[in-house]
Length: 159
Image (cartoon, rainbow, N blue to C red):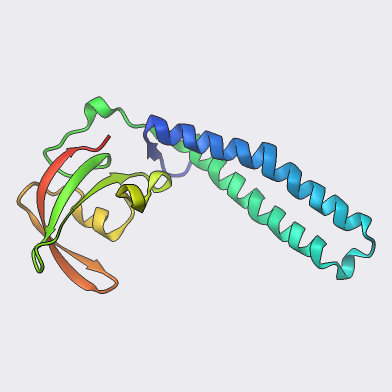
């Protein structure tokens, strides 16, 4: 079996809802588009047919990926989340020691990441650099623009 995907209860609900939407709404719509393209005749030179088949292939790949994630999903027991070191489901406040800018991020599973809500994936360079560190630690995180030194100001429960 593949790697375990840790999610919050809300994240698991969203995974299931996304999968349900793809299977029960998007899949039948694509099948209908393919059927309509076939009815138009010669499919060897039919762009609509090709586009619908491509969309079907991408959708089936997404469905398979979500099914794999769901099969390996484990709900995180929030009562067991510690705040002595940075870990998934923590809200971490960090300060850029170069320009003193302060920011807070909640570290979440890949599927729950949402930058607008300051939820970053556990797989991002920032989250990877913070994992296992304590308040007061300074970490140097490599980002596309270079290396940024961050000091960990606070760690709290993220949800």
